[in-house]
Length: 548
Image (cartoon, rainbow, N blue to C red; front, side):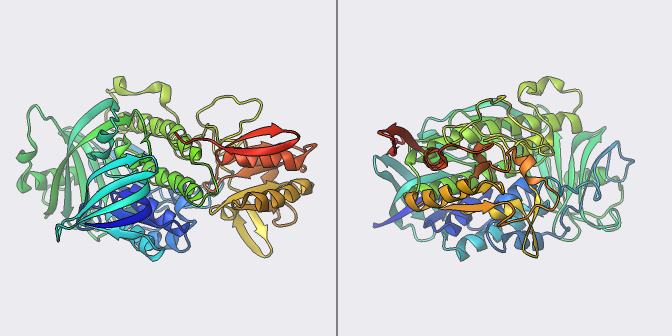
């Protein structure tokens, strides 16, 4: 049996696993991804990548354009409607092609590509950036040691087993994954909400849906509730229909019955339909009681199972991966303490919780208004706040003296508070118009006001001293703010500064000057990288905190 070593081993090539491999490899961290399936998904499954997910992916050069190229519909070219059938008068129009302009919130646009188009793009970029991705390979077993994880991988074609020593494992093995069981992780929450049959089909949709673009219909049909969605292949569509498992079994849905369900969904009784795939699944809402154990980190569906109404499940998976990637990269390179990784679960679990609550609310509001009893009101926020305005709190976030404790903020009215996402503002760099988000991604970034030269000088010295990636950007010198929006949205004065993490979240802020900018920033930068900072004889010492 051969023995190999890799810093990060990723199990599962869905959205979480492929995003993690891409972003780790882009950050220069060797990683291996293994997937038991022979290829990426051949079925559309999930549809769409929202703005926040596009923000965390667009840092990889070329990836944003490649994802849009994979979609048949253009950016933001979406229609969402509640109706009895596709050809019935709308009960409610949720989204039109002209209602998705959110340039005040994000530089990114919504990509409507299906999972069968997104996964190959992520795979290509993962490999191009150096990730080792192997399909038809299973994780047979693994054990944790004080210095890493020992995993036994099996090549399904040859039967050959390989021992891999990894510093860390990312468990992205999906809703039915078993890695969490090894750590005794429990899944908690409402559980199964509905039994559903998914039908992929081919029909003359151009005649039914003139105008192109991406279309999603939530169907409140007298015979069933469900959804219809267009796919990236021309004249391909997908319906998801709920059924009563006390009366029907999945095997009852043969091609003839599914053809009729397609006709009922579209509202065209004589439509010629070709069934391409029939797949039963269960809509569920569950959250892991822990998102990590030891050196194993759960991401995506193996950590949280989210109803697909609103598309937050796939987004949470991508964003889990992005959060792990920058933290693991710093730790693996020795630029952060291992304790930084303990912040992953602390920060991401509340995000998953509110995503689940919002998805259940979407399910009730769009499909089953009489099921108000299943809503989780205490974790429910608006869709924009849930998807773009969630807040982080952990030891790696240095809160302001006054923190209101809110779980989210309105992205249209950003506060600049530590733990919130950096406000998107259009800026000028020379002759170029850029977003504030174009200035972040690979390392930390210190933004300072035009009179914050002491912060810039301190950051340059702290960056050299720490060896960790720390960039600087001074308003009025490195960039210009023609509309005067940036400082008000950061919540700092012209003498102030704030520190932004590689994921675009603010981790420290000084509204104005400091009597000792160097000492203040030195201590803050150490803390946000997982170090314990202590004052000793007038000097700062950064002490590594045990990750356990």
